[in-house]
Length: 342
Ligand code: AHM
Ligand code: MG
Image (tube, rainbow, N blue to C red; front, side, top):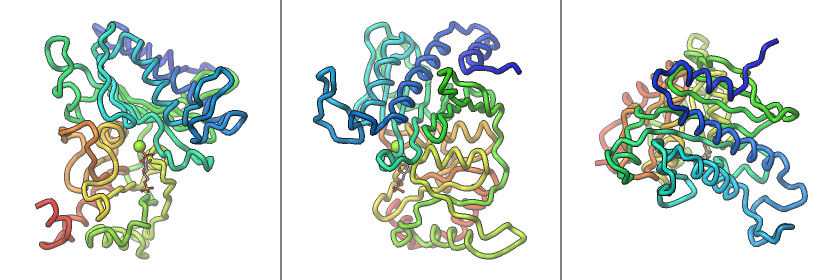
């Protein structure tokens, strides 16, 4: 049986793009290599060197042992920064963007190098999320016009789940495709071509421990999902891993609704626009789903800072629409978050 590798797939997309120079292909290849290195490191975490978070240790080469999230950040930054394909890299791990002055390329790379960090040391799935934009501003200087682009300006986005197997999912605008790493061959093979999210699911995914800090519309929405009603398929099942990549991956394949609403502790929301919400919104829309803040399409948003946070409702089209409709119907004058957001 003929099997398509990730490298072949990326090259095919380049061949189908008139005027393509190969720069995007090179960038994607570097992302792939970095993800393989991190996959190997994640899968051997705990063997020998203690990489689970105890910094200050010295490894056999006399270097300080990095935490896995730091290791991922450094690996992606090194490989992509030297690839000649990007002029800036922003990372959830870094306060400021890294501007590439030596042999810059035309792309901007944004990443959450290892998402779900609370799950690293308990052997639960973690992942990488990335997003690619093209430099917009004229001249060689990288400006806010380049770093703070509207979500729908993404050229490509993807994520890698380091789980029972390592899966690389990406879209460059034409369909969403998933590749599974064959650990023996060290190669990603196409395992999930043209992913389409079911228009409705049967699960909801949210940190319900935050209930007391939610406003009334959010409580009403979750209470509604738990009611019994055969005609609408309720109650929904609850699934929450606490690693966005893993919760999103399940939602993409099986359908359903993932939510991280604003709450009293995080009045703006917890998840970040550039590193989490926007790339996953780009992917879910290309797979036929929806992503909103509860009342605004994520991809219509232009961030004001690289670490902007916002509420996220993402998943099956019907489920996200249902959530928006219920939230809107229940927003009453005087609800605390209306008051907060003026
Ligand atoms: P991180 O970037 O520090 O790992 O935080 C993001 C994670 C997401 O993976 C996940 O969806 C969410 O935080 C879980 O948050 P909580 O523990 O509040 O439920
Ligand atoms: Mg994160």
